[in-house]
Image (cartoon, rainbow, N blue to C red; front, side):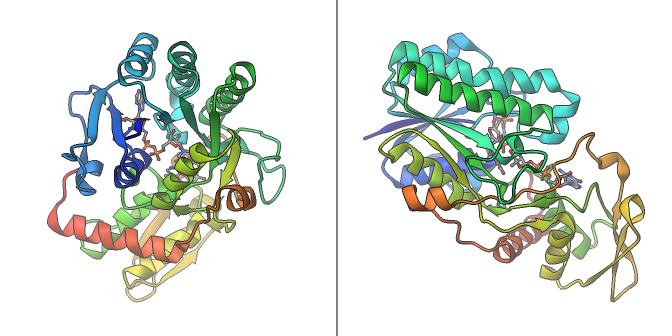
Length: 344
Ligand code: NDP
Ligand code: GDR
């Protein structure tokens, strides 16, 4: 039985990847952080929290000694580094915390591999945020990077360190440049889930207005459950490499708002521009969405669209779920959770 460590099993991707690896007969060691109220709601939602082959390990990526100890004790064949301070907005407020976790944290794991067993295969969760300011459309593995947030800069460091350990020490380190991927398990601070949760609350009469920042931003959104399989495929390949995972379609935040309200049977009409923009319920005339300029970021990534051809050719990976299907899935789940008063 293969052993894999997933850092960040309490997060969206960590939970889906744990489910996928358990289905594929792995023994999974999923790490979580010691906090006053550890949150296992995602693995509980997937019904895997008591799976006999899932072992929950207390771990903090910022602690070098514990990285070495963990790798030494578990001796896995594969490590998936999904742990990160992953919220772009917060990275502007906490640039150093973001750097400690999201940038330097990866070196703790790479060093642990180098010291304990250089044959361990390593996946690094890189991101389309490294592309940042548009240099080329669509973005590929060869597109120049120009990150626009402390998060993007931190991830770029981690990306290059993964490549550096590959070239310097022959470590099988692969980097997945993943474009945005969402699901009912997405954190509610990210825009898609913030929207679908608010749509459910508005439809159920629990909220009057949703406030958003920049609605002109364009993103390439896919379904997280499919993307974690791509991570696994990268570590089964013949050689380590860098791969883009994306849908090759881009939509604005406004388009997603329209789609999500439509999924709840509400048609919207948009009025005004920039910070004066609102979305009005066509049936009632009520304002349901308002722009709050305080939610704008100091620097924005305007347009992301990825070309996943290399992943398709080399890994046989392809995104399948459409944004419309994903949006309906998320609204339905948030309706159910809001109806039963689900606690996260
Ligand atoms: P989440 O924010 O949902 O999960 C992040 C995980 O990292 C959580 O389990 C969190 O634990 C853990 N974590 C944070 N800080 C530390 C730390 N110091 N030590 C150990 N664990 C820590 O992210 P996603 O699941 O969405 O993303 C997974 C990875 O993929 C991240 O690295 C993200 O940056 C990257 N990525 C995500 C994309 C997306 O669209 N989802 C796209 C491209 C890249 P806790 O629960 O305690 O906070
Ligand atoms: P992103 O995701 O920054 O792309 O990073 P997020 O959902 O936070 O933002 C997407 C776009 O929506 C705009 N936006 C808002 N965003 C949030 N969170 N809240 C709002 O109210 C709001 N209004 C408008 C943002 O300005 C932005 O343009 C995600 C994370 O998962 C990263 O970890 C990952 O690396 C990238 O996706 C790929």
